[in-house]
Picture 1 (cartoon, rainbow, N blue to C red):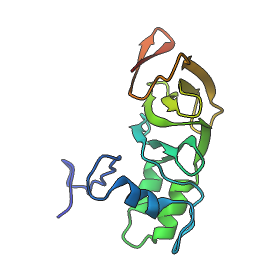
Picture 2 (picture 1 turned 45 degrees about the vertical axis):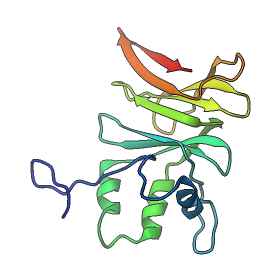
Picture 3 (picture 1 turned 60 degrees about the horizontal axis):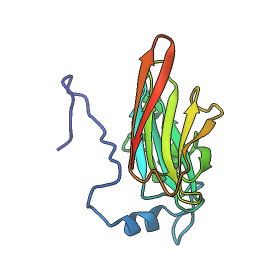
Amino acid sequence: DSLQNADSQAVSVIASSGMELASGEEVMDVYKKSGTNHTYAHGAGNYCDMAVDSAGDVIVAWYDADDGKVKYTWQTPSELVAVISSSTTTAARTASREAHAQTVDDGGEYVKIVVDSAQHIHLAYYDSNSGDLKYAYIPALGGTPVLNTVDSYSDVGEHITLTVVQDGSNYIPYIGYY
């Protein structure tokens, strides 16, 4: 059985962490940068989030536990169609996912991502190295992130919510945390 949309087209499901199909350690062992049967350019982590922009690009942000950095990548609708083909090899799927991968900053646990209606990317995340809550604004896919420390008092930002509201031509991030 496969999932289908209203037009009877096959639907691919992209899941974030939280499913109990395997433990976090088992998943991380499979996706570490190098192992017995594989080598990846970017490691996996326990924290990830996903957004879809108005062009249909799927954007995934995650904490790379191997590097201790927050990263993101994206795939266009045409790239997604190509990689879900049953004839696509695992190596080709991995290369496609890693083709756009970008490093944003140190830290990245508890990462949240929002894409606003103008295609700007907003990330909120916790940096365990400094104990700070941070925010990154990325003007476009592949663009240079503008980084800000939201709160650096004590050890804050392990549980985050992120919403972006438009006010005229401005987009205002609202970050909840404790």
